[in-house]
Image (cartoon, rainbow, N blue to C red; front, side, top):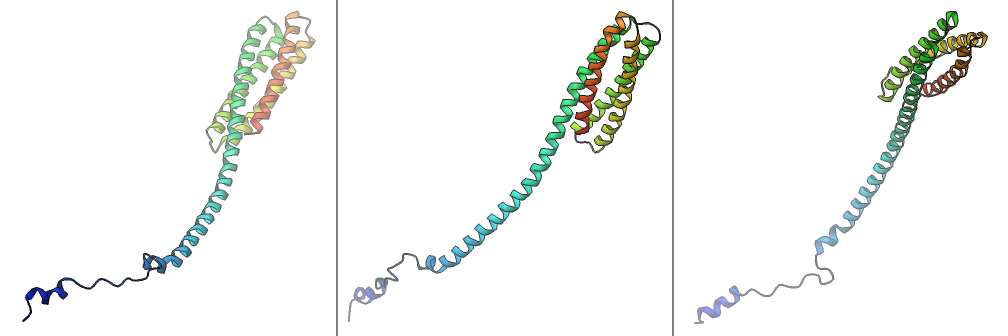
Length: 192
């Protein structure tokens, strides 16, 4: 009989494994590699399509953003002009106190209309600055108010020119400058 150790030697020590393919280390990777490459290409194509779609939507967004920026710039410019014009009106009111009669009444009426137009312009500019839907309607109302104020200022200017009072003559140029300021404000409000 053979010793037990001799009999179990074959069972305990299995034969060395036959080398599988020697050309590749992991045959399963090679088998799936063409599928993975195709999947990678599909993913790349989809990513490219997504990037193109994103670029198109970004283009639309940038147009909207540019439009919003332009509106906000026009609104900010209008608000700056309004502040300057309010200051001019305040100064003109102080100087117009020395006027008398009809000329004084016309001048103060024109300045009152101008202040009203500036108030409406402020509302329109702030609505546009905050992207409110009613901004264009408010801008239209402000433009009509500016037109009325300019007509009153022209009447006041004519009255000041016709007056023989030196204080009245001194106010002609500031009234003309106020009209020019309203014209510039009109341009900004038209851009809202």
